[in-house]
Image (cartoon, rainbow, N blue to C red; front, side, top):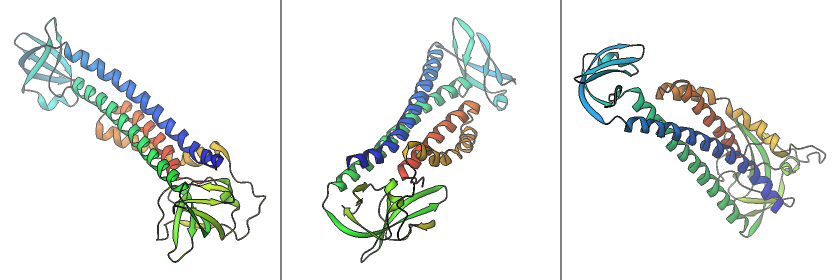
Length: 292
């Protein structure tokens, strides 16, 4: 049982570690950018009211009684002719900002990168921890004998293994992939513990979700009544990662959408793309992708 538990966990642990590493890198880089922005803003201690007199090359020309400066400001043309609060460095008035200028936006985005990375890391850890605790608790419960069929269902990009559990009320239980699934006869008697964990042919099959009483959607493929015992089932993390890689395909499009909403350009695109890609890998592992 211990060996089967390690096999079931290591795929999820690897995917979680990749997500946490990427979140750590993004959070660190975002924090450095935020700290730099805050340091630059903290030196702008003087305040006056000025006027925006022109806009060119991505910056507005701002003048106030004691000085003037060009302040980077995306789409600043709409503010030409308006009065605004100006914060500037008394030792160097050419270093100035106005509300909504690029330095404020970049600092806010950097802080958002930190908080978003932390939120993703916490979500992944909590979701994975809850899934493991529920599975371990069920595995320690007393078991009953049940007749099941192993089926594979493809729904969209996801292919999963399910156990079709016979009984007064037919149920379907998604399970994490194990090579033993490939050679299970159909039907076969298993020990069902806590209604969530199945022991088949001496191997513990852990749930990758909750059991349902309505046939799950997707293209169905049943195990044969008597599978060839010599069938070579996919093994190892490489096989799992190959099938999970399909969930990385949408990542660049997610990055484009995020960069468009956030207005963060290439930096926002590459950051969102990388996070979406590793979350795709994690999602495949969390949901129990089947490489067979």
